[in-house]
Image (cartoon, rainbow, N blue to C red; front, side, top):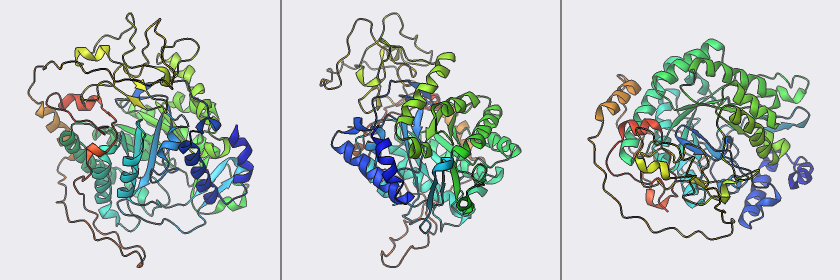
Length: 519
């Protein structure tokens, strides 16, 4: 592997410089079609979680690409999904350098980056320019100068602006590098925050005709009682998913390294045990009602399997990439495969391996087509999910935001039909004459009930004018009252991603539907 050759050179650089050089190299290779030098195509292992169909269960954790600058290059490595951010309403420089440190002897990283990013508007612009069509998570947070009592305004502002472009949105309340941010994990603060965000999510879903799941990212340093309390809030507010975990303030596993005593969050191999403990406790408390994305300490393929065995539905990696390179992605996917086979979730194959990039639209096994769900239109049973050569998933149901992912996360193929090679052009078939379907009255009561459960007596603040732009020469401006604003993005300029959940089907059963990112 190329990475094993260049890693010694990268490790001669300071950690943040090496980080930037690596990302720049990835983008260069991607721009010139040289991605295969770093990684070979990964056999598909589709799975449906939160109503989204993931090409494989291994994703990229937030933090590596904070602004979406390298989205296409990172997706080409074979991730089943990519999460970018954390992004804040306004640009901020983060904490002073040096702020990123690696400890190869322990396969550990300490960072105190502090949500350095170019602001949510820059991130949205990067997504618009991207070719990525896969499952995209966007991680949002608060500006460092925003008072804690106004934190919800920052999250609302980001949610409004990224909603059209995300497959799911992650609420980051667990970074140890933003002062007092973890206070939002207390039951009272979390209930109020998620109530406001859930209400806005449902309003946006009704406004745009597509439901984007909300996910909460938690810390690994929570006591069992706190985890149980958080689980109750997540269930009460009907949150769609939870990520466990962020980095830890503990120094277990690096006590023998004097330099590791400095401030920041610890990730890498020493985090594995703490993260897995939180996953297991959450899994017991949630009892399968909310899916868990496991992250923390995955440096070998078997570590990913441990997260699934503890109760996670998906996994994410980041620090392990620094020490193992892109080959860790395939190792993790392969390690997860036996788990899904054992639990009845497995791709249907042609030969020893079927790659998502070799499937053609409409391939459906005559004898194995799943029966249509009682709430699913009859046409859904004949559709299939298709992944492009970069691992992106698309669906023939793109025009209907209420249709569940076509094949429920299982690759469908037709025996005896040879798939085209990746290089063969695909000609879109002529659309069939649409047949009007009977229109049912909107199920407004279901939406009202969901809104009531989300907000209780909490009333959102009236939108305020946007804050004036800061003078570039005057240093960072105070982030005051970043009021939630209506999204100004033009959906017609963005790529198409259909991200639908069962919750959307419950209350958006009629009316015209919009595409996420029309091509």
